[in-house]
Image (cartoon, rainbow, N blue to C red; front, side):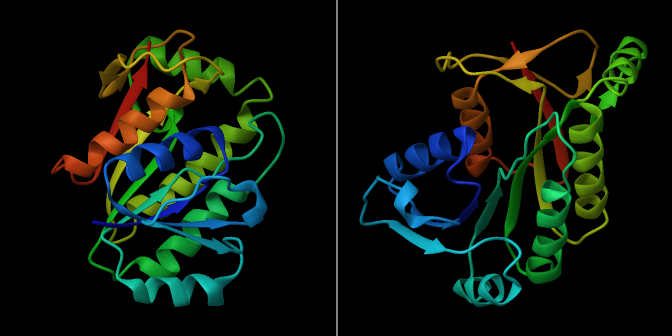
Length: 205
């Protein structure tokens, strides 16, 4: 399996990188600074650049990846379009490629119960609204594309040890949920062996 990972230097990305390489899979990562990558592996290819370099990504797309994993993120409390911009570039360059697209999104993009809708409504009154808007724009781009996607919907990702167990739900029922980076990585990499297509699944403790 040949995998391209975007967001490898983030908390979730680093955990995904380790899991993928432990599985003996071929992995290419796109990072803005190669010096941030201290891991060395025969199956790891490190490419320096960012998602705004369309020419570079176009060149990478010729590698015929089986899977593209996107865990690019921004500060959830500040205005940003990074997540949405990344989704647009991915669709522009990889939309017609026969590969799977695995990515994280927010719980606001999930189907919601009545109390789930109330919870998201409250969050939209806080600075988290910036992350909600960014992920919503990315989500809209992906679901309107031809990509074969599986999205893992995350609540607030807090630092903490990997637990290895968490709830997986198709509907957000409300309340304040959290998840640790290592468990997000597990949920994403578990999708490598699934046949899920065009799905969104929430994970939390």
